[in-house]
Amino acid sequence: MPDEMVHSPCSKPTCDQIIDILPGPFVVIDQDYQILAANRAYQKHYGMESEDLVGRYCYEVSHHSEVPCSQNGEQCPLEEVFATRQPTQVMHIHYDKNNKEEYVQLQAAPILSNDGEVMYMGEYVQVLSQPGDEDTLLVGGSPAFLRMTSLLQRVAPTQSTVLLLGESGSGKERVAEYIHHYSKRRHGPFVVVDCGTLGESLIESQLFGYEKGAFTGAGSRKIGLFEAANGGTLFIDEICELPLALQTKLLRALESGSIRRIGGNEYIKIDVRVIAATNRDMQRMVAEGQFRQDLYYRLSAFPIHIPSLRERKDDIVALTEHFLYSLPEGERHIPLSSDVIEKLLSYDYPGNVRELRNIIERATILACDDILRPDHVVLESGSVIRETGPIETTVSEPLEQLVNRRGRLTDKVVLDALHQTHGHRSRAAQMLGVSERTLYRHIQRMRSG
Image 1 (cartoon, helix red, strand yellow):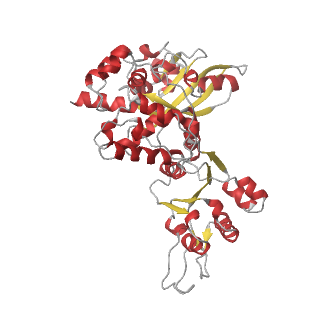
Image 2: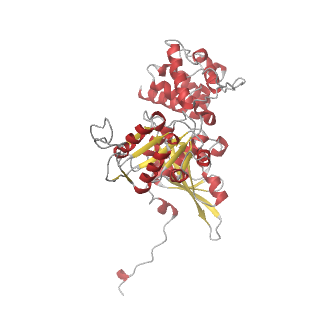
Image 3: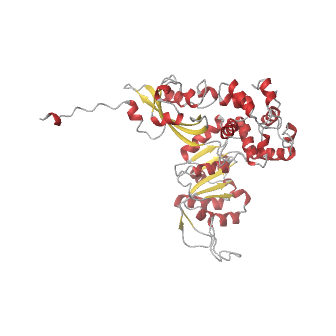
């Protein structure tokens, strides 16, 4: 056989060649949190070459932290994978190559030895959104918030019915919008119906519509919200206020994928994903015969607990700033003084995020052109206020004196804080009494200026 016809056997691909096939950031990490390999997408995303990444701690690169994320209250996928030998998904807040915050969904899986022991973890990083975006649907970074959003990311791409359980004012409608936004129906309609504000006859006509002449006053055909949401998502708030008779009709619609207008004879096929929400104890209502058991099981295919503001107090400053940015002239009250922060954190918020928003709007009206002070933060009468001592602060006295008393950050203050923290933005934000998002916005203005 001629020499040119002889082919040498192909060598096996290397780990780096294999992981470079993946389009998104992917990294291999050992049990000691050290990076063993990172594909080109990961290197590009974090602005580092392979030789600069290998051997570094994962939390150092993605979190800009000196300790594992579990020590900062986050769920560590590495620790879970090595403990359970099972894949996992978690939501984290990372920093990209520009030191900008980003929400990421981490899909982690074990890499096993021949005898089934976990040798390494492979982690795929999916960037979801930037917390600083003006159209951010959800705001937060507390462990309770991240656990919730991790579940939302898992269920959003599916067609499953979702049941949101949480106190009044905790943001259930925003959560439903979040699920819709990250679903395959994002380009379809998002329709809301609040059963708590409608009477029995009105709920039925709103949900299912009616034909002309179906009842007195029905002068023309009306399309119901099920039909209006076709191809999209229907959010049914306060589902427990639905009368038993309508519960039966709703169950039939969910089971058959079709509805019939009031006064109509034909069933109409619909393609609608339903998200329901309540602040009541549904299992107790089922036991007492106030809610159909079969409908409860149909709705609770994927129940999600929406944490109260008491369960995510770490998010109060970020939420406050978010509300201030949305109010005219509200931004000038940022950063918040330590006294204002202390008062906000000392309260239990029985009305949750909705109450916080009202308190902040009221405070800006009372402050007018003045500095936002604790006496402008008027808490609801009759609500529980915790007795708390002074909140510890890491702000050094010289730096604290530099903060502009008109409620604005100055370039000098920001640069001094970054210098004192060796460029660590999270610690600098804590030192200044602002969220990392606010500090990043100021840094971006400094760069563009």
